[in-house]
Structures are given as structure tokens and as C-alpha cells.
Image (cartoon, rainbow, N blue to C red; front, side, top):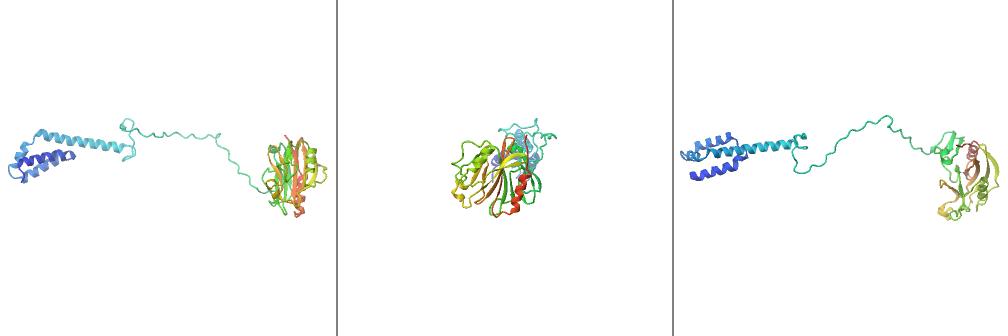
Length: 320
């Protein structure tokens, strides 16, 4: 059995170690009363007399201080952003951070767009497909400084709005294709449509007569003699060109058989296959050369060829 001195030391150590962990005065008093009643007579009374009142007060004060610090710490944690409750502190209550806080994005008001700032609806992209019968702008003035309109006389001609190419049944290639195409402005006429990379002239054609002469002189074309015509009230020339039946496009530069290329746009007349026939109208519209090409093949239905000729005859031109 421990002596009173040993018990005294043990209780003192216990008070110093355990009391600051949150034991209240009520618990301490109950513990001492329970122990006093079960201790042998005289030993506990002597020990209690040796306990100093000021030591008890110091211990109890320590317990209270720890409790106050714990309450404050819990309160600070609860009021931190993202802590329990999620309520950020007010500017006067914000605790001093031990580390620099991360920057917080400041919300800004979203301006309400005015009626003037509302974007206009975007027009859908034009799609290639069948076109309705009737007037059709084949060439827009923004492309060639000339607006060319033709009348589509029958259904199943395909193209894009204000595009310079129309195809019957959506097909211009062999064996039965038909396509009406327009070029304009200054152009280089190749000396040889197959060896076109090495036979492009240094200068583009400058007049209707020069263009007719360059086309008639092309190698392997067998051009017909030009005839005078009037298209849309403007003077012009008409002739027929033909791609040789035995032409092998794989032997041509880049596998292409070409007639001419526009200077401004870089668009070239590239033929669809051997044996293609091209009825060509060249019109001088107030100084702008317009080259109209109706291309077809020996097996192309005659009515498709007649429809292309009818569209050329219906052509009208507008200039700025």
C-alpha cells in the first residue's frame, strides 16, 4: 500500500496532467468527496490539508483558460470560408492569416446588351443543290464588276447562289455531263492545254480579238472559225473548242487539261475529260471580257445542250 506522501505526489501529478484537459470544478469536488469517503481514516484528511488553496485556484484557472482558448479556436474555424457553416468573416472580424490568402476573384456586373449591340442573325451558308427555274444571278458584280443574270429554263440544274458554274443533274463530267461556266476579266491563255505550266504567256490577253486568237492557236484544240454574236446587247465572238478524244490527262501537268486562268482570282478552266466539247462565247461588256463556256460530251442529251444555249441567249449584264 502507498504511503500518504506517495499518494500526495500522485494526486498532485494527476492534477497537473489531467485537470487542464477540461475537468470542471464540479467533477473535481465530486472526485475528492468520493475518494475521501473510501480512504482510511486520517490519511486523506492529512493529504487534503497539505493541498494549498492557491494551487487549486491556479489549476482551476488553467482549466478555464484552456476552455476559453478552445472555444475561440472553434469559433474561428467555424467562421473561416469553407469551415463548418461556410460563412466568411466580415471585414472587422477577419482573423489575421498566418499565410498569404489566395487571390479571390471579384465578381463584376454583366452589362445588359442594348438593342443596337445585338448581333444580326447569321445567314445560313449556301449549299450546292438544285435551283428553281427562272432568273438566276450567275455572276455577281462583286466578282467581276459585272452582274450577269440568266434564266434557268428547266429543272434539275444544280449550283450555288451567285456561283459561276451550273451543272445539269449535278454532273458535268463524262459520259453525259453538261456544265455552263463563266470566267471574266484579264486571263492568261495557255499555249498548250496539256503542257500548261511551261506555256503560260508572260502577259494576259488585253482584248476580245486577242483572246479569240489565243484560243484558236492552242495546240491540239482544232478550234472552229469564230463568228460574230451579240449577248445581252453586247458584241462578242463565238467558237467551238474540243478536247482530243485520245487525250491522256495523266500525261498533262498535274494531271489537268487547262484552257486559261484568270489573273485576279487564279481560277482556271480545267476540263472534265477527253472528248469534251466547249461552245465558247466571248463578250466585251464595257471593257470587261466575259468568257462563257458550255461544256458537254458526245453522249450528252441534246436537250441539255439546248438548255445551256438558251441560258446564254437569255443573259443580261449590269455594270456599276
